[in-house]
Amino acid sequence: MGCHQVIDGLRPFDLRTFRRLILYDQAVRVLFVSENIGGHRTFHRHIEQALHAHPEVEARYVHVPPPRLGRRIVGAAVPGLGRFDLDLQPARAQLAAATIARRLIRPYVDEADVVHWYTANSALLCLDVVGKKPSVVSLDMTNAQNSRRLPYRYATRFTPMVTWPVAALERRVYERADAVVTKSEWAAASVRDDYGIEADKVWAHAFGIVPGPRPRPRPHRRPTIAFAGTTLERKGGRRLIDVWRADLREHADLVLVTKDEVPAEDGLRVVRDVNVGDSRIDLILDGAAVFAFPSTMDASPHVVFEAMARALPVIVCRSGGMPEQVVDGETGFVAEPDDSGDLADALRALIGDPALARRLGDAGRLLVEERFDMNKQIVPFLELLGAVSGRGRGAVNGRTYAAG
Image (cartoon, rainbow, N blue to C red; front, side, top):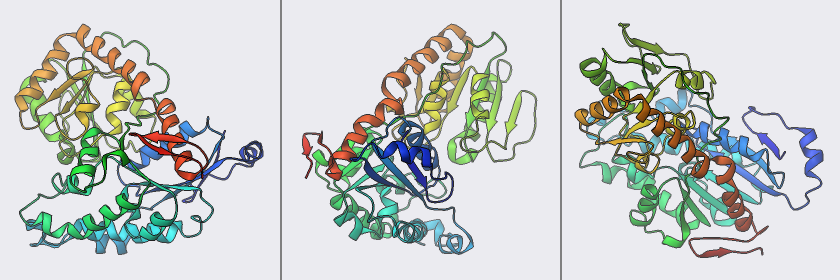
């Protein structure tokens, strides 16, 4: 078991782990810095779990805490200007979080052999650190992509102009980092094309999740469609409800894991008290026949892998990196983002053919085990961190990193 410490108090220092670590005098000391929004918490949770099998890594985690009143005020939208995306709201929020990240990492950077930044936003105000300390940046989506897919506002003709301050800092983070790791080819293309970063420095690596044990076979009963998303509007949940009401109410139930309030009705169940890391999500997925996630704002959401790991066929939109997670027609279906009829057809196909749903679900579980198992995917990633730190040797896209 490796040596791990979480700065925000989520995990105490383990002395038994330390005693074992002293046998490994070449342990790579990695400082993991997380912007800690949305799926970032899930990403670091799976990394922590996978690192238990790697005593050659001494990991320390810095998580930017959730915003309090001051940061909320700094990052608040300005009425009127926000409508035209002229209020610099995303930039203000990102720079406020980056300020906190810089303060939190200060006591620990000198001890680290290499720093892993997730995402580049956490390093926006740490360019001096990225330039001097071996650094790897990982991300699921660049700010250039995010500005075209804003989850709570709409891009306008002014968006490129008002996002350039952060984009300029972000580019310098990528330029100074030793390597940039993206969770999809879709995101890698943005790093190369939108920011002009040389291709041999950019590595698409899905990471995935720790899949856990295989689920038990599902009993034969009335099928249930599952959805999970903090807010329905941002994650496509409202459209899913409309499709279910219009086409599928008589054939399947619908369960929504969300923080939003939804009026009760026959066949619809809403679970509002499930948080990140809650094991009850597995129970909900185990009771479903299909997982539908028609979001158009997500990049490479962990919940898609989590549903596949529970042997569920998954329906996503052709958006972001999600088509790289779901193999259309083999582990689920990729629906067109603006076509509710396409979503309805995919749902009807799986609800109406339980054998097809089981076959695609089993294929999804196998795909997670083969390509998206964090226990496996973390090995080449750790080789990269070790090589960048000067403690090992490795290569990404033909670029060789050697000790010393």
